Image 1 (cartoon, rainbow, N blue to C red):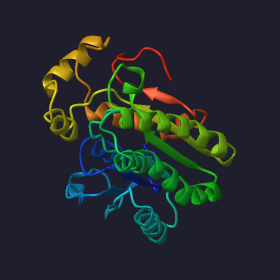
Image 2 (image 1 turned 60 degrees about the horizontal axis):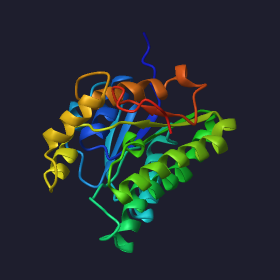
Image 3 (image 1 turned 45 degrees about the horizontal axis):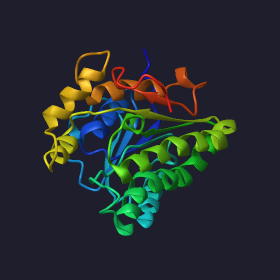
Image 4 (image 1 turned 60 degrees about the vertical axis):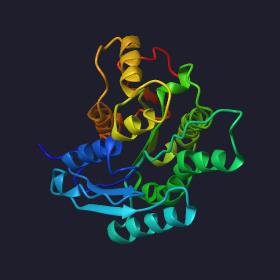
Length: 253
């Protein structure tokens, strides 16, 4: 059987590890050329499956000029980007009393504005081709009583921006959706949880206890969902927030 994404070019942000690396692995297995974008070098590209090109780009997605440079590099190398996966995010612990304007703006720049700027830079090529897929990483914690002011606000904005982009781009053959996980015990999450409060293990156990599927999520759960959303089988699905969380959230928003 022919690989579903053979000849397609995919750009994934936050791709060096965790969920982003799982996205790259799935896209590569399905035959795509994969551009792994991260603030740190992606030194694990050689382990990706498939015969497509694997390229790493170092980019701080909180800086618009670096987003533009990364997009230009992809367009110059491949002609266009067919699949855009906006996964990069930062999640410092924040609360109202200690919030600064600088930290608030940094979280929104990385988690929300980068989604807009990458879509702005790469959607013209998708529009010209009459086919494109944009998938953003949202978060199921927007539906939960979690105290994390800037992060929750940013992910709620990602969900709304997903729908807004879907509205604007739908008549061009471009679909825009979001995958919303809950807690995934990636290296980034485990490191953050050690910064104070409940342990990582406590958070994971509490999350699993709320799920209907009684195991912790793994990055490949999200990669499998991505593989469907970027395929031709999902061509009539757009503007959706897909909660991939074992039933931790049982209503969509």
